Length: 328
Image 1 (cartoon, helix red, strand yellow):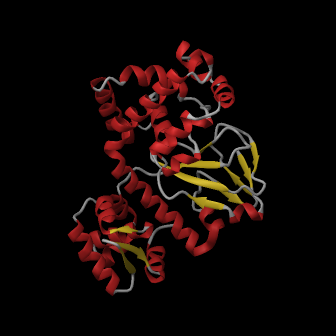
Image 2 (tube, one colour):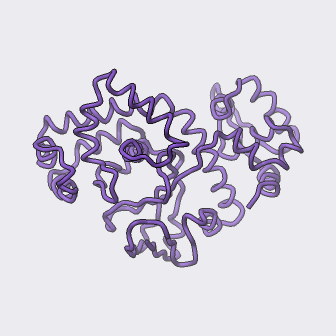
Image 3 (cartoon, one colour):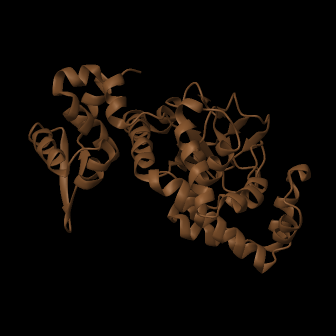
């Protein structure tokens, strides 16, 4: 797949602020129906397989969500609305208020051999009972399948975003697009997705592009189906926690700063409060406060108080130090 940019599109290309719960929901459903990524996803699959029957969700997920979001190249764009960036609640509400015409068109493209019988037909027709059942099943699935691990998922996504933002700050949008190699290849004016199952040519024509990191997306980036909608590329992130990633990739920083302090510096690339950094790294808030004070005194981070929280981010010196010591 090839995505064609204009200069205006480069100016309108953005990174999402974090994981999108609707994309993670759909990607996790596809992962649950497959066997790929056993090393990374095996424990999660076993937990979900045990939890869903316990809470009465195994049947609804199998008979409603699997046919709607099959492990296949196509699923309806309506399942991943832009409102998902505001949270699960607004995302699900946007799905449930989809127009009947769009429900009919997008659900109608699904492979009928995977169908959910009369229920999927009722949903395609926009019948209130089917829509209500869809909303209940999506919320229940998220609560038991995704919410328990959301903090860890967010921490890993934030680590990836820190790398992308570092490339952006050092070299602009084109440098950030180059940072996705080899999963995506950038050569102005085209962003190529070599492993994407489609050979489509998409022209942005000034609409820009949103890049969304996803923990449950595996193997290759994915896109929406309709070329006329606002364009999104969802890309896979690694599955290592930030402190493990730092140990594997930041050896020079660890020799300079020590393991925990190097991990704090890397985590601060994405910005965050003392509490948020503590969750990302799995350490206490007191430990974060100790190390951020030292990093701040060295001119590597800046800390700004907002109400009762203190938010930390890298200075230019801190960003340059990280960039200098991390592998390409």
